[in-house]
Image 1 (cartoon, one colour):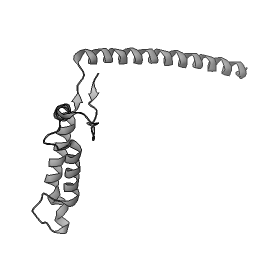
Image 2 (cartoon, helix red, strand yellow):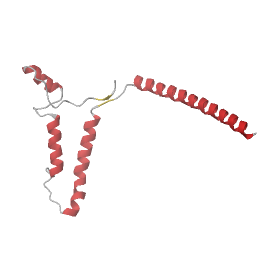
Image 3 (cartoon, rainbow, N blue to C red):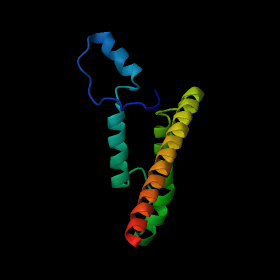
Image 4 (tube, rainbow, N blue to C red):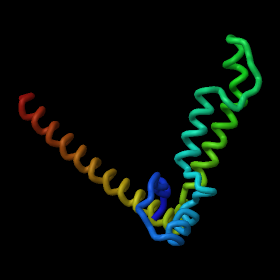
Length: 130
């Protein structure tokens, strides 16, 4: 199965001792900081403008934010792309086959349906024409 990995949980159910530490380490938590606390910290920095020691006057503030915003954007892209599980070659081939067969089926279905109703319309119009 391919797609996105599920989001890591914000809280853990209680686990005994070493099992809990192992679960935390295995799920990608580092130094006791959860991904959620890192996301909240990053959001607060974005909103407060923290992390920038440069004070820029009002009209130029938006222009001065672009490098930081691009950095955050590419960080978010890299973070999301690491969560993607790409389909295998066999999955792509089989799904492409399913799409081609489905499109062909519905193409024929609509061709027959359109031809049938067109023929019936011609019969009805010719009947009332005389």
